[in-house]
Amino acid sequence: MSDSFRDEVRAWLAAHCPPSMRVAPPEISHLYGGGRRAKVWHPDQPAWCAAMASRGWTVPEWPVEYGGAGLSREHAAILREEMRRIGAQQPLFSFGISMLSPVLFKFGNDDQRRRFLPDIARGAIRWCQGYSEPNSGSDLASLMTRAEDKGDHYLVNGQKIWTSYGDEADWMFCLVRTNTSVPKHEGISFVLFDMNTPGVTVRPIKLISGASPFCEVFFENVRVEKTNRVGEEGQGWAIATYLLSHEREMISSLGKIRHDTDPGRRALEIFGTDGEGRLRNASLRQTLARYQLDAAAFRLWIEHGERHPSASAGMGAMSSAVKYYGTELNKRRNELYLDIEGADALLWDARGPAGEAWARNWLRSKGNSIEGGTSEIQLNIIAKRVLGLP
Ligand SMILES: Cc1cc2nc3c(=O)[nH]c(=O)nc-3n(C[C@H](O)[C@H](O)[C@H](O)COP(=O)(O)OP(=O)(O)OC[C@H]3O[C@@H](n4cnc5c(N)ncnc54)[C@H](O)[C@@H]3O)c2cc1C
Image 1 (cartoon, rainbow, N blue to C red):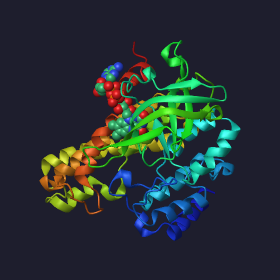
Image 2: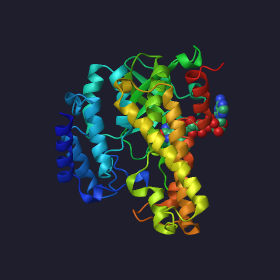
Image 3: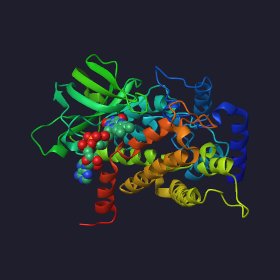
Image 4: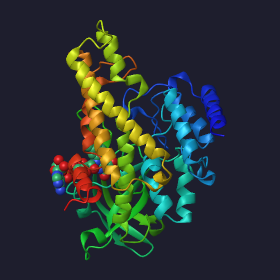
């Protein structure tokens, strides 16, 4: 059964995944995000996404009625393995899939699931995350964006910051304060709204990597229907942390080696081998070997988790461990490229053999240990909730 499924997947990918979609994009932000204003970095991206969506393979384990393929854990893992084998580009990079959908499945109502999930599965609407505020990052529960009760709707006023893809997204999932007279964790609600709603203003922030993937977002009397609140009023903190555990799992995948940018291969091409078949550069050999071992162990850890029957429930606090380790690995890999390529890799427009933008990716990787909660916060969570330290 599994073998015949693998054969079917392999044949389908051979027929439908064009060669241009069998390489990783030069920068992670060049993955296809879909949406009403879809930014196309390669002309084949929309068709590749549509082909995968037509099989339900952008979200292989979701039920068919919501745009998935209803695959078992095991079959979904086979699909991922076969995609990895040919280096298939992720067809849709979507906060809707990785972050919002687990929340809709667990806390949403039937109407919300029917309304949003099929569009998320085929990349018709793109989502951004309205969590952080100028004075509420690690201490997220102190957020001040206010949602005032107006009967059948809320009026939202306040500001978010560091909103990734805020200028490209169609909708936002957003934490708002609905009650100021209870302890801070209890007065938060989780709402959804269209970024075209009057009163929403987006201003991109330019990063050191040259890109502007995130924004400031301002709200002035933004009307949000109560039917767009997920869960109960005041339940927002439980929803927020559940979503964060899925976000951290998603970010941790940065730690996996992409086949076309394996630093080991690149080092061999540049330095060659000595008489004993070892990489000629001894100090690099040490660093590389340590990295390769850690990366392989990490990949096995993640793959084991993906196949585990309880995986669909999410990893809970363990997501902090994979997030911490995956992002540290990604930073080490980007450092390694610079060690291997030398000073030339620091040139702004320097590109690797697969088109990867070394300097920009290296600069971007610094943010990995901040986004989705900083490394210090992950270590605190691991200490308290995984290890049970006082
Ligand atoms: C690339 C990128 C993308 C992002 N995208 C989004 C997004 O789409 N939506 C969104 O809402 N936010 C987003 N963020 C924001 C991110 O979630 C916050 O930057 C992060 O939570 C840290 O908050 P802060 O920047 O306010 O730093 P602070 O919370 O002010 O932290 C400053 C420093 O103090 C340390 N610190 C704080 N509290 C503690 C503690 N209790 N113990 C130990 N150390 C502590 C932190 O580790 C950090 O080093 C993004 C950030 C980055 C870098």
